[in-house]
Length: 386
RNA sequence: GGAGGGGUUCCCGAGUGGCCAAAGGGAACAGACUGUAAAUCUGUCGGCGUAAGCCUUCGGAGGUUCAAAUCCUCCCCCCUCCA
Image 1: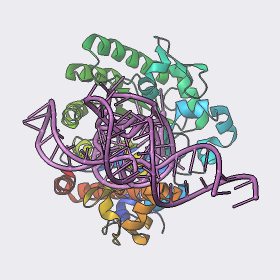
Image 2: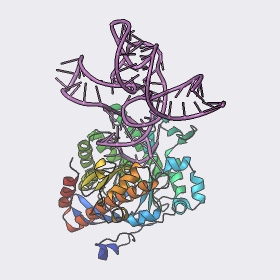
Image 3: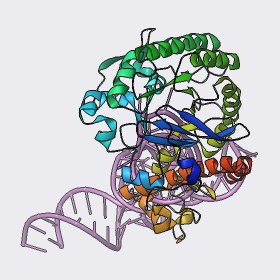
Image 4: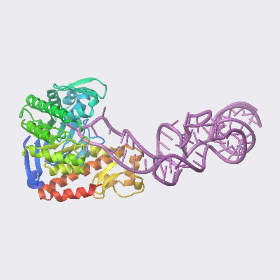
């Protein structure tokens, strides 16, 4: 099976935007369908980007990724800097050559690790001092250094270093953090001015859960000539409704003619809401992590494959899915592999969950082009309503 | 035949007078996971009850004691070594 082809190919697919060029092809309400040019090919949006933190989408190969229809994957600056080291990656042909993934790559800056490894770091106005989670050694990340590391990795889309504000942070903390994120964003862009290379650079809006601070952050960040803009600091513990509300509140402050990226989000519903708010790019560990932990996304909703009810179930996981896993194996077998902790379980489950997410994204894009996005959104909401 | 060791809740296994429905692990059952320190974590796990609590349970039978998985007697079964 080769990479999924879009039914809407034809006129649309013939567009080959230049590097950093973002073209909108259709709108449906606030939802947008577009194309973004990168050094390693064109990305059709809305797009979901599987997370491959350490230069690998856990459990599957680049070939699996292509078969499942992935256009772009993520890597992580912090993790690849620590191991194997960005210099080594650079000498091995950059992340594309090293991992043998010839399609676009986006690298996260390590901003999320400022949040998730909070016990192991110290923030100053200069940058962040980390203690390696691997060996405890100390490392300093300045915004400029983070850009340099990402250029070594040669990612197509680089993210600026930011501080992902924890949920529940009070206003004074959030104000201070926002100022830092803006300052770091400026330094990042100054260190690598627009047009000085093929690596795109995206800015990140923070501001916690204060709408006026979100607005302020968006205004400050969008003043800087970035190639795209991201909303950070979501899905950090807030209720989904709250996230949706803030995401909808933020997008009006983002330029219409640049790609908009909702970082770290989310569930199928979250992504639909994000698209409805006018966002174009998404990434999340959920489909891959949940696959490894036995939760699978299907046209019938979430399926916990370890459940006893599937012990003797000869039917495919999702009859409406055409992925390798669903074409080939029964629920009973998938359950057995999971319960027995067989390594194949992780691969088959990951293939399926990504196939589900990426098919959903294709459907979203097609529905925007066809002008019936709301209908599709309602269908998915019904599927995943608890 | 002799000497020694042992039989504990689905399994392994701790417990040697009360704080024991009985540690711990496994299995089983269920849940969580959102820019990945996650192939991880959490809960339940004798029966009834919302609960206090009551009932049944530590190879079997009987006994000592206010109180026994724990002490005594007999019996059944398993393992090791010596004949």
